[in-house]
Length: 314
Ligand code: UDP
Ligand code: MG
Image (cartoon, rainbow, N blue to C red; front, side, top):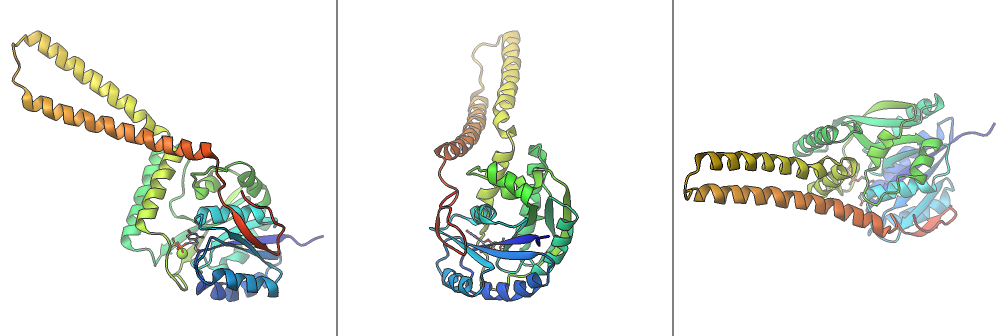
Protein backbone atom coordinates (compact mmCIF):
# COMPACT_ATOMS: atom_id res chain seq x y z
CA UNK A 1 0.00 0.00 0.00
CA UNK A 2 1.18 3.51 -0.75
CA UNK A 3 2.11 5.66 2.19
CA UNK A 4 -0.29 8.45 2.86
CA UNK A 5 0.99 11.97 2.42
CA UNK A 6 0.66 15.00 4.68
CA UNK A 7 0.80 18.45 3.14
CA UNK A 8 2.08 21.11 5.50
CA UNK A 9 1.02 24.54 4.26
CA UNK A 10 3.07 27.41 5.62
CA UNK A 11 2.16 31.03 4.89
CA UNK A 12 5.14 33.33 4.65
CA UNK A 13 5.23 37.10 4.69
CA UNK A 14 8.60 38.68 5.46
CA UNK A 15 9.80 35.75 7.52
CA UNK A 16 13.43 35.50 6.44
CA UNK A 17 14.57 35.22 10.06
CA UNK A 18 12.00 32.63 11.08
CA UNK A 19 12.15 30.38 7.99
CA UNK A 20 15.48 28.61 8.66
CA UNK A 21 14.36 27.95 12.24
CA UNK A 22 11.03 26.63 11.03
CA UNK A 23 12.62 24.28 8.51
CA UNK A 24 15.19 22.99 10.98
CA UNK A 25 12.53 22.35 13.60
CA UNK A 26 9.88 20.83 11.35
CA UNK A 27 12.10 18.66 9.15
CA UNK A 28 13.16 16.07 11.77
CA UNK A 29 9.62 15.84 13.14
CA UNK A 30 8.20 15.26 9.65
CA UNK A 31 10.90 12.70 8.85
CA UNK A 32 9.83 10.75 11.93
CA UNK A 33 6.17 10.49 10.86
CA UNK A 34 4.62 7.31 9.53
CA UNK A 35 3.25 9.36 6.63
CA UNK A 36 5.11 10.81 3.68
CA UNK A 37 4.99 14.60 3.53
CA UNK A 38 5.49 17.80 1.57
CA UNK A 39 6.11 21.26 2.96
CA UNK A 40 4.29 23.78 0.80
CA UNK A 41 5.47 27.30 1.46
CA UNK A 42 3.22 30.06 0.19
CA UNK A 43 5.17 33.28 -0.16
CA UNK A 44 2.65 36.08 0.22
CA UNK A 45 4.60 38.84 -1.55
CA UNK A 46 7.45 39.09 0.96
CA UNK A 47 9.76 42.03 0.46
CA UNK A 48 12.71 40.54 2.32
CA UNK A 49 14.90 37.56 1.55
CA UNK A 50 12.16 34.97 2.16
CA UNK A 51 11.62 34.14 -1.51
CA UNK A 52 15.33 33.72 -2.19
CA UNK A 53 15.72 31.44 0.80
CA UNK A 54 12.75 29.31 -0.22
CA UNK A 55 13.84 29.02 -3.85
CA UNK A 56 17.24 27.86 -2.68
CA UNK A 57 15.59 25.35 -0.34
CA UNK A 58 13.46 23.83 -3.12
CA UNK A 59 16.67 22.99 -5.01
CA UNK A 60 18.03 20.92 -2.14
CA UNK A 61 14.86 19.30 -0.86
CA UNK A 62 12.25 18.12 -3.34
CA UNK A 63 9.73 17.66 -0.55
CA UNK A 64 9.74 21.43 -0.24
CA UNK A 65 7.28 23.07 -2.64
CA UNK A 66 6.82 26.76 -3.25
CA UNK A 67 3.99 28.97 -4.45
CA UNK A 68 4.88 32.64 -4.63
CA UNK A 69 2.31 35.42 -5.10
CA UNK A 70 2.77 38.44 -7.35
CA UNK A 71 2.10 40.71 -4.34
CA UNK A 72 0.79 40.56 -0.79
CA UNK A 73 -2.72 39.10 -0.70
CA UNK A 74 -3.03 38.39 3.01
CA UNK A 75 -2.70 35.41 5.27
CA UNK A 76 -6.10 33.93 4.37
CA UNK A 77 -5.36 34.02 0.65
CA UNK A 78 -2.04 32.31 1.33
CA UNK A 79 -3.74 29.49 3.23
CA UNK A 80 -6.32 29.07 0.45
CA UNK A 81 -3.59 28.88 -2.20
CA UNK A 82 -1.80 26.31 -0.06
CA UNK A 83 -4.93 24.20 0.13
CA UNK A 84 -5.43 24.55 -3.64
CA UNK A 85 -1.91 23.38 -4.50
CA UNK A 86 -1.48 20.73 -1.82
CA UNK A 87 -1.51 17.16 -3.08
CA UNK A 88 -1.54 15.27 0.23
CA UNK A 89 -4.21 13.04 1.75
CA UNK A 90 -4.53 15.66 4.47
CA UNK A 91 -3.45 19.26 4.87
CA UNK A 92 -2.16 21.14 7.89
CA UNK A 93 -2.03 24.93 7.79
CA UNK A 94 0.47 26.61 10.06
CA UNK A 95 2.44 29.82 10.58
CA UNK A 96 6.09 30.16 9.74
CA UNK A 97 7.00 31.81 13.04
CA UNK A 98 6.86 28.59 15.12
CA UNK A 99 3.92 29.89 17.15
CA UNK A 100 2.21 26.76 15.90
CA UNK A 101 4.57 24.09 17.23
CA UNK A 102 5.52 21.41 14.66
CA UNK A 103 5.79 19.08 17.67
CA UNK A 104 1.98 18.74 17.41
CA UNK A 105 2.23 17.12 13.98
CA UNK A 106 2.52 13.48 15.15
CA UNK A 107 -0.66 13.88 17.20
CA UNK A 108 -2.44 15.41 14.20
CA UNK A 109 -1.44 12.45 12.04
CA UNK A 110 -2.76 10.08 14.73
CA UNK A 111 -6.16 11.80 14.63
CA UNK A 112 -6.13 11.72 10.83
CA UNK A 113 -5.41 8.00 10.92
CA UNK A 114 -8.49 7.60 13.10
CA UNK A 115 -10.49 9.16 10.29
CA UNK A 116 -10.99 12.74 11.45
CA UNK A 117 -11.99 15.17 8.73
CA UNK A 118 -11.34 18.42 10.54
CA UNK A 119 -8.89 18.95 13.39
CA UNK A 120 -9.03 22.26 15.18
CA UNK A 121 -6.01 23.31 17.14
CA UNK A 122 -7.07 25.25 20.20
CA UNK A 123 -4.58 27.49 21.96
CA UNK A 124 -4.48 27.19 25.70
CA UNK A 125 -2.34 30.18 26.37
CA UNK A 126 -1.26 33.05 24.21
CA UNK A 127 1.88 34.49 25.72
CA UNK A 128 2.67 36.93 22.98
CA UNK A 129 -0.77 38.51 22.54
CA UNK A 130 -1.22 41.33 25.03
CA UNK A 131 -4.18 41.81 27.33
CA UNK A 132 -5.86 44.12 24.80
CA UNK A 133 -5.71 41.50 22.06
CA UNK A 134 -7.07 38.83 24.41
CA UNK A 135 -10.01 40.93 25.62
CA UNK A 136 -10.98 42.14 22.14
CA UNK A 137 -10.73 38.60 20.85
CA UNK A 138 -13.10 37.36 23.58
CA UNK A 139 -15.52 40.20 22.77
CA UNK A 140 -15.40 39.39 19.08
CA UNK A 141 -16.26 35.72 19.60
CA UNK A 142 -19.09 36.59 21.96
CA UNK A 143 -20.57 39.01 19.41
CA UNK A 144 -20.27 36.71 16.42
CA UNK A 145 -21.72 33.74 18.29
CA UNK A 146 -24.67 35.90 19.39
CA UNK A 147 -25.34 37.29 15.93
CA UNK A 148 -24.66 34.32 13.71
CA UNK A 149 -26.33 30.92 13.41
CA UNK A 150 -23.01 29.20 12.80
CA UNK A 151 -20.91 28.66 15.90
CA UNK A 152 -17.30 29.65 16.35
CA UNK A 153 -14.84 28.15 18.74
CA UNK A 154 -13.29 30.97 20.75
CA UNK A 155 -9.68 29.88 20.82
CA UNK A 156 -9.50 28.22 17.43
CA UNK A 157 -6.48 29.41 15.52
CA UNK A 158 -5.21 29.46 11.98
CA UNK A 159 -3.55 26.19 12.91
CA UNK A 160 -5.79 23.37 11.68
CA UNK A 161 -5.81 20.18 9.67
CA UNK A 162 -8.30 18.91 7.11
CA UNK A 163 -8.65 15.63 5.26
CA UNK A 164 -8.54 15.60 1.47
CA UNK A 165 -12.33 15.30 1.41
CA UNK A 166 -12.80 18.39 3.58
CA UNK A 167 -10.13 20.23 1.57
CA UNK A 168 -12.06 19.50 -1.62
CA UNK A 169 -15.06 21.29 -0.14
CA UNK A 170 -12.88 24.31 0.61
CA UNK A 171 -11.35 24.19 -2.87
CA UNK A 172 -14.62 23.87 -4.75
CA UNK A 173 -16.99 26.03 -2.73
CA UNK A 174 -16.18 28.76 -0.24
CA UNK A 175 -14.38 30.87 -2.83
CA UNK A 176 -15.69 34.08 -1.29
CA UNK A 177 -13.55 37.19 -1.68
CA UNK A 178 -14.44 38.57 1.73
CA UNK A 179 -13.94 35.60 3.96
CA UNK A 180 -12.98 33.95 7.21
CA UNK A 181 -11.37 30.63 6.49
CA UNK A 182 -11.43 29.52 10.12
CA UNK A 183 -15.19 30.04 10.12
CA UNK A 184 -15.63 27.74 7.14
CA UNK A 185 -13.33 25.10 8.54
CA UNK A 186 -15.38 25.01 11.71
CA UNK A 187 -18.69 24.82 9.90
CA UNK A 188 -18.30 22.32 7.09
CA UNK A 189 -19.03 19.38 9.39
CA UNK A 190 -17.12 16.07 9.05
CA UNK A 191 -15.92 14.13 12.06
CA UNK A 192 -13.97 16.55 14.17
CA UNK A 193 -11.34 16.60 16.84
CA UNK A 194 -9.67 19.34 18.82
CA UNK A 195 -6.12 19.29 20.08
CA UNK A 196 -4.87 21.80 22.61
CA UNK A 197 -1.53 23.46 22.09
CA UNK A 198 0.42 26.18 23.77
CA UNK A 199 1.01 29.22 21.58
CA UNK A 200 4.63 30.25 21.88
CA UNK A 201 6.39 33.51 21.44
CA UNK A 202 7.21 34.28 17.84
CA UNK A 203 10.57 32.63 17.01
CA UNK A 204 11.88 35.67 15.12
CA UNK A 205 10.68 38.74 13.25
CA UNK A 206 7.48 40.58 14.19
CA UNK A 207 3.72 40.15 14.01
CA UNK A 208 2.04 41.33 10.81
CA UNK A 209 -1.39 41.80 12.31
CA UNK A 210 -2.09 45.21 13.80
CA UNK A 211 -5.10 45.91 16.01
CA UNK A 212 -6.51 48.05 13.19
CA UNK A 213 -6.26 45.20 10.66
CA UNK A 214 -7.88 42.83 13.15
CA UNK A 215 -10.73 45.29 13.73
CA UNK A 216 -11.51 45.60 10.01
CA UNK A 217 -11.26 41.84 9.72
CA UNK A 218 -13.71 41.34 12.61
CA UNK A 219 -16.31 43.69 11.13
CA UNK A 220 -16.17 41.88 7.79
CA UNK A 221 -16.45 38.51 9.46
CA UNK A 222 -19.52 39.51 11.44
CA UNK A 223 -21.19 40.87 8.32
CA UNK A 224 -20.28 37.77 6.30
CA UNK A 225 -21.71 35.35 8.81
CA UNK A 226 -24.82 37.22 9.93
CA UNK A 227 -27.76 39.02 8.32
CA UNK A 228 -29.00 40.34 11.62
CA UNK A 229 -27.48 43.86 11.31
CA UNK A 230 -29.49 44.27 8.10
CA UNK A 231 -32.68 43.81 10.10
CA UNK A 232 -31.83 46.64 12.49
CA UNK A 233 -33.62 48.98 10.09
CA UNK A 234 -36.88 47.12 10.48
CA UNK A 235 -36.66 47.11 14.28
CA UNK A 236 -35.71 50.79 14.44
CA UNK A 237 -38.51 51.66 12.01
CA UNK A 238 -41.04 49.74 14.07
CA UNK A 239 -39.95 51.46 17.26
CA UNK A 240 -40.11 54.91 15.67
CA UNK A 241 -43.60 54.16 14.33
CA UNK A 242 -44.87 53.13 17.77
CA UNK A 243 -43.35 56.25 19.31
CA UNK A 244 -44.89 58.40 16.58
CA UNK A 245 -48.36 56.97 17.12
CA UNK A 246 -48.08 57.51 20.88
CA UNK A 247 -47.07 61.15 20.40
CA UNK A 248 -49.85 61.66 17.85
CA UNK A 249 -52.50 60.30 20.21
CA UNK A 250 -51.11 62.39 23.04
CA UNK A 251 -51.19 65.53 20.88
CA UNK A 252 -54.71 64.90 19.65
CA UNK A 253 -56.03 64.19 23.14
CA UNK A 254 -54.48 67.16 24.89
CA UNK A 255 -55.28 69.53 21.96
CA UNK A 256 -52.81 72.10 23.15
CA UNK A 257 -52.28 75.05 20.84
CA UNK A 258 -48.71 75.81 19.76
CA UNK A 259 -46.49 73.35 21.62
CA UNK A 260 -43.33 74.70 23.25
CA UNK A 261 -41.19 71.62 22.61
CA UNK A 262 -38.21 73.06 20.71
CA UNK A 263 -35.60 71.09 22.67
CA UNK A 264 -37.60 67.88 22.31
CA UNK A 265 -37.80 68.30 18.56
CA UNK A 266 -34.09 68.98 18.17
CA UNK A 267 -33.12 66.04 20.34
CA UNK A 268 -35.54 63.70 18.62
CA UNK A 269 -34.34 64.85 15.23
CA UNK A 270 -30.70 64.24 16.07
CA UNK A 271 -31.46 60.87 17.56
CA UNK A 272 -33.54 59.73 14.61
CA UNK A 273 -30.94 60.85 12.09
CA UNK A 274 -28.22 59.09 14.05
CA UNK A 275 -30.18 55.84 13.90
CA UNK A 276 -30.92 56.36 10.22
CA UNK A 277 -27.33 57.03 9.21
CA UNK A 278 -26.10 54.11 11.25
CA UNK A 279 -28.43 51.80 9.38
CA UNK A 280 -27.52 53.31 6.02
CA UNK A 281 -23.88 52.74 6.98
CA UNK A 282 -24.50 49.10 7.78
CA UNK A 283 -26.26 48.61 4.46
CA UNK A 284 -23.28 50.29 2.82
CA UNK A 285 -20.93 47.76 4.41
CA UNK A 286 -22.98 44.90 3.02
CA UNK A 287 -23.03 46.59 -0.37
CA UNK A 288 -19.24 46.83 -0.29
CA UNK A 289 -19.04 43.09 0.33
CA UNK A 290 -21.52 42.39 -2.47
CA UNK A 291 -19.53 44.65 -4.77
CA UNK A 292 -16.34 42.77 -3.99
CA UNK A 293 -17.96 39.42 -4.63
CA UNK A 294 -19.52 40.66 -7.85
CA UNK A 295 -16.23 41.89 -9.27
CA UNK A 296 -15.00 38.35 -8.82
CA UNK A 297 -11.33 39.24 -8.82
CA UNK A 298 -8.89 36.47 -8.02
CA UNK A 299 -8.21 35.64 -4.38
CA UNK A 300 -4.51 35.41 -5.24
CA UNK A 301 -2.20 35.62 -8.25
CA UNK A 302 0.74 33.26 -8.51
CA UNK A 303 4.00 34.47 -10.00
CA UNK A 304 6.44 31.64 -9.30
CA UNK A 305 6.10 27.97 -8.36
CA UNK A 306 8.82 25.45 -7.56
CA UNK A 307 8.52 21.65 -7.51
CA UNK A 308 4.87 22.04 -8.58
CA UNK A 309 2.88 22.20 -11.78
CA UNK A 310 1.77 25.75 -12.46
CA UNK A 311 -1.91 26.62 -12.11
CA UNK A 312 -1.88 30.42 -12.31
CA UNK A 313 -4.50 32.13 -10.20
CA UNK A 314 -7.38 31.20 -7.95
N1 UDP B 1 1.18 36.23 6.90
C1 UDP B 1 0.91 36.17 5.54
N2 UDP B 1 0.43 37.30 4.91
C2 UDP B 1 0.17 38.46 5.59
C3 UDP B 1 0.41 38.48 6.99
C4 UDP B 1 0.91 37.36 7.60
O1 UDP B 1 1.12 35.15 4.89
O2 UDP B 1 -0.25 39.43 4.96
C5 UDP B 1 1.71 35.02 7.57
C6 UDP B 1 2.93 35.26 8.45
O3 UDP B 1 4.14 35.14 7.72
C7 UDP B 1 2.80 34.16 9.48
C8 UDP B 1 1.28 34.00 9.61
O4 UDP B 1 0.73 34.54 8.42
O5 UDP B 1 3.36 32.94 9.03
C9 UDP B 1 0.71 34.68 10.83
O6 UDP B 1 1.12 36.02 10.88
P1 UDP B 1 1.65 36.69 12.21
O7 UDP B 1 2.55 35.76 12.93
O8 UDP B 1 2.21 38.02 11.85
O9 UDP B 1 0.30 36.88 13.03
P2 UDP B 1 0.09 36.64 14.60
O10 UDP B 1 0.62 35.27 14.90
O11 UDP B 1 0.85 37.70 15.28
O12 UDP B 1 -1.39 36.75 14.78
MG1 MG C 1 2.44 34.60 14.54
